Amino acid sequence: MDAGTLAGRLALYNDNRLKIGLFGANCSSGRAVTKVPERWSGGWEDCLRLARIADEAGIDFMLPIGRWKGYGGETDYQGATLETITWATGLLAKTKRLTVFGTVHAPLFHPIIAAKQFVTADHVGEGRFGLNVVCGWNEDEFEMFGVAQRDHEARYDYAQEWLDAIKMMWSRQDEFDFSGQYIKLKKVRANPKPYGGTRPIIMNAGASPTGQQFAIRNCDALFVSTKKDTLDDTAEHVTRVKGQARQFGRELGVYTVGVVSCRKTAKEAEDYYRYCVFENADWAAVDKILAMRGMTRDSLGAEEFERARRHTAHGLSGLPLIGDPDSVAAGLAKLSAAGLSGIGLSMVNYADELPYFCDEVLPRLERLELRRPRR
Image (cartoon, rainbow, N blue to C red; front, side, top):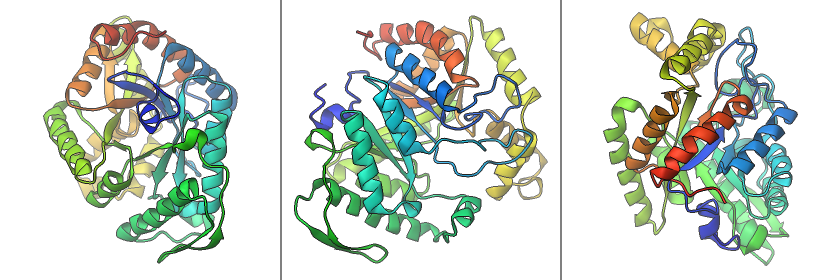
């Protein structure tokens, strides 16, 4: 793929039908709410080691979580995190092929500073930087910043102005003013522009109708939640949102997130999964996460609450892909058949588990013609 075209960026510079990425590695414990000693550190040395393994193996992207405050519990789950734009810039400087995203809360980053940061990362990575725009839901974090959270609809109105202003800074050669309801800028001048005369790929994970419409209008990729027993519903949803994007003259890639435990046998994988995310879950952190979302035993009932606890503990509700290489590859193939463009995966310890996944699962996906052999 040509690095100088937007099409090359959107395809992550390859022809893989199913893109494979790593999600959440910038946070302590990653996405597994577990107390096991081998849980992911989220530290820089481990992230760099992981990025180099991923880059060499042909993994397509790394996507961080925008997190500013941990969730408590015995582990202070996600309490130590690396800021995502500087994290991405560092990883881009140390890799050759990997696309690395920054995850940015629009209300917390001034658009002029943010646009400059994104361009800097993009030049370091020679066109491999991507932007994941988030509007925020965690009241604890906004309170820490002294920023009032807007109501749901206004969050996306603000994000629209924020992104419009940044796109203008990426493209306008002349000096300009920007006058919106929320953002007012005077005599803006922004150079250099993104690498190669195009722009970074933009993604969003809005789950509400308003959030999804924001992604359909503005983004190149939309992340959606998926469950094994609802793949038919997922396929219908993918078809629907892609069709809506085409009405705006745009092609939209639809991605999901998953949790992998892959071992030589299904029993080994299931035993390790049970050991990490059920027998050794940080239940205090799980309960706090659920409470922040208004989900308690009283509000849901005992049975539904326990189901929500288990679903959260295994990776903040990512799709579980647990088993031997054949079954994990088959599960990924079903996602592709449902129309999904790719998946961001998490693991209990990314760097320790990724080599086996790449050695065993990726070749199976190549034989299924979902990925090209690594050159």
